[in-house]
Amino acid sequence: MKLAGWGNYPWVETVARSFRGDPAVLDGANSLIARGNGRAYGDAAVSHHLTVSMLAHDRLLAFEPETGRLTCEAGALLSDIVAAFLPRGWFAPVTPGTRLVTVGGMIAADVHGKNHHVAGSFGRHVESLRLLRADGSVTECRRGEPLFRATVGGMGLTGIILNATFRMQRVETAYIRQQTVAAANLDAVMAAFEESAGWTHSVAWIDCLAGGAALGRSLLY
Image (cartoon, rainbow, N blue to C red):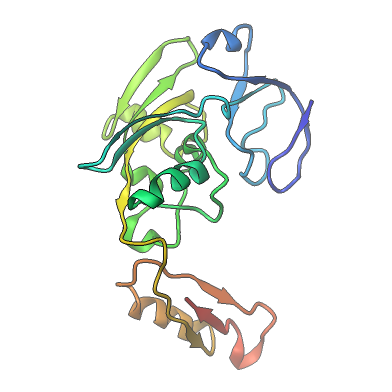
C-alpha cells in the first residue's frame, strides 16, 4: 500500500503490517519502521520496505493514583489517555500540537508542548520503556541508561517501543486561565516571553505578513 505522513508528502509504496504483541510479524524484514498514528511530518514513520502499525498495541496497563505513574502500550493514543484520566484529575505532562498521537511516537520524536520552558520535552517525564530490538530480543530501558537516551528522540532507529512508564500531572480542572498580551513587533514578543517565564504555558501567534516597524507583531497567550 501507499503511505505518507501528516504532510501528505512523500507517498511511499510499502508493506504494512499491524503489531499486536507478536514479534513474528517482523520475520523476514531486513528494514522496517514502527508507525504510530501517522501525525509526523515528512516520511518519519514510513519505510520503503516494512511499516509496522502500532495502533492495535494500545492498552493502558497500570496506573498508580498516589504518584500519577502510568504504564501503557506504545500504540495508546494521547486522546484516549486524556479522555480516561482528565475527569479523574490527571493530565499528560507534555502535549504536542495534536492529541492524535501515540505514546511511542511521542517518545520517538521527544515531542515538546507549549509548556516546554517549564516542563521540558516528553522524554523528561518517561521513567522506563521496553524495546523490541533488531535481533528479536526485548530490553527494559531505564532513565539514564545509554539505550534509553538513544531511544528518546531516536525516531525509531533503536528498535520498536513496546510500552512505556511515565508520570501524569495532577490538575484541578479541565479549564485554564488565559491572558493575552499584544506585542508590537518581534523584539516586543521576545521580551514578553522572558517576562512571562513563570507561566505554565505560553505561545505566540505571529503576523508573518507585517513588515517595517511591525515586523513580527504578535499575540502572546
